[in-house]
Image (cartoon, rainbow, N blue to C red; front, top):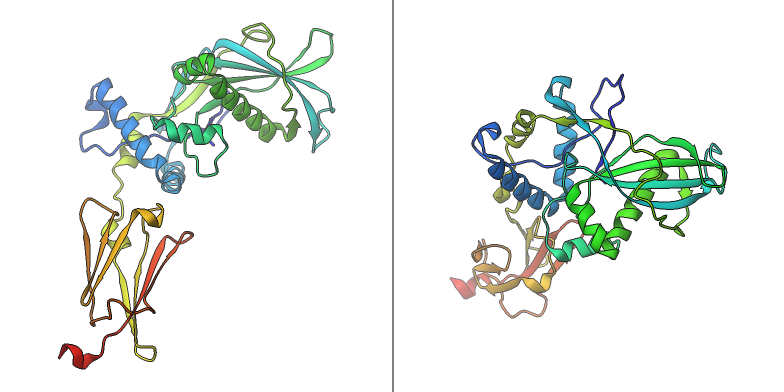
Length: 324
């Protein structure tokens, strides 16, 4: 999940990757702000369809990035609302069970906004759908030790998000619960604890004063450098692999990297000398066969493997003399 970490004073490496990129031919710095925002939104939406590609690009991004490729941004989070929960389990015994935890949900324009996506994709995140690609970047501040109203020790975390998703969480209960769950999970991962999902919402915009923080974000020039990396051609990935099994009198066609869609959205027509595949692009895909096949043979099969995204088609060979 995307997170932004505050930059320590003695930091020597970048703790945050900005996961928005663009594919424009012009230099990023020469674009207007409106053009930059439009490009970033467009590419973010594209990568949302292929999260693994985004992860690979982000990994390469970190390997090639240098300290001078980043800029330091001073951020003063604005208070929003508070979640009060407690520790129910701690793997390292640093925090006692029952320790009160306050989470200040705050906001700032400097925090990257989530990608623009259809409402159906956002709802997947609400429902914890494993295929969900919608993410809200969060800047989780360092923990602070204070006391609750009863004078007992308490932990305070400041979780800062972009202003736009914060405003939505103000008026949309389901979205607010999603933000709270996201922040709870980040804290659990940060300090190796399990937090209670039974929480209260104190009537205060923040627990204590929220300190300013410094974030390190990539400069536009670095985003442009990563953006211009060449992408593998789709044609090379989807080129059919055809083989003939003379012993079984079968012809096998493997079409790799089919779109991750239900097979019911495709159409496959078999002709004696070619296959016609529809529903995978803007035009009909024609695949020439090296040998004639029996169109209506009962042993003909077409199988889609969801894990590898391969479509495997086996067809009975027609007698050679029939087409001589």
